Image (cartoon, rainbow, N blue to C red; front, side):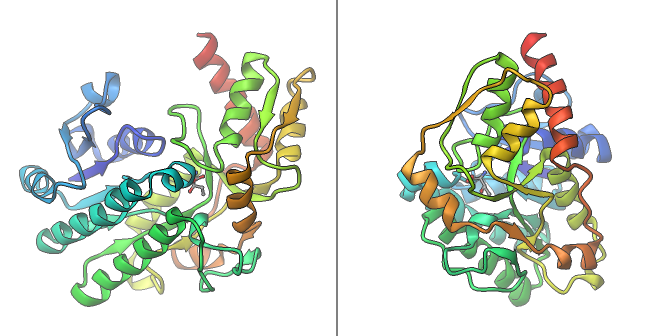
Length: 316
Ligand code: VAH
């Protein structure tokens, strides 16, 4: 059985649904915290339990109650929010991770805890960023993600706990909104386009960042967790990417479908500083070699699907 920690978040809400499709509703527990309870299909389709990563006993109880074999740990504050709430970011991201890993060690669960392009810093090679390279991020988000990778690898080598993770790029989806990240603009721009509103872009023109459509992100997480361990040279922090673009590029792509769509720049200094410290384009050849990673969506096909699905969602 599977436990999804953070099942009502941007990734968690869709991952829970996808896992239930693949493994059966009753085999996937939607973990949540007070104040972010699951509703609708997420609640009705399968089991749901309060699972607050900062409460080790609570996690252990849920793992025992449902005989959990695999935990997808999606509990984290994203880069911008984390920079403003560093204590909470560390408590959830790292103290929470420690609790998850200890429970997983004791109960022999597999663990997936995503890292991010945010785990790289200014001194990391920005173009075709290697799988194994320098990681000196200057955000607390980035520091927590490097720690996530190292701690997960340590549990793997020390205790044999089966920990696996990818470094997600910016994720674009129409189901749940992102929770305060530097790449959120790539989601917000679609909402403005579908609502016929001018988009005010907080990221400067020309700033490249890796991005991925949510269906590919779910596919990456599940494929890695199902991969043959004998093939894995790496365990945590696989580079994965599907596309890399700057604001003017995604704007031009949307404009092909919405000719009257307008965008202006109002650069947010914090988002600018973070975005410029992140890679421009990852090298994801290790994921391709070790577990056959291959994205299905590029900018053009993602834009068609996002505009279609978001129009249906917003206009009914
Ligand atoms: C953020 N969407 O912007 C998250 C993610 C790679 C970006 O970590 O913080």
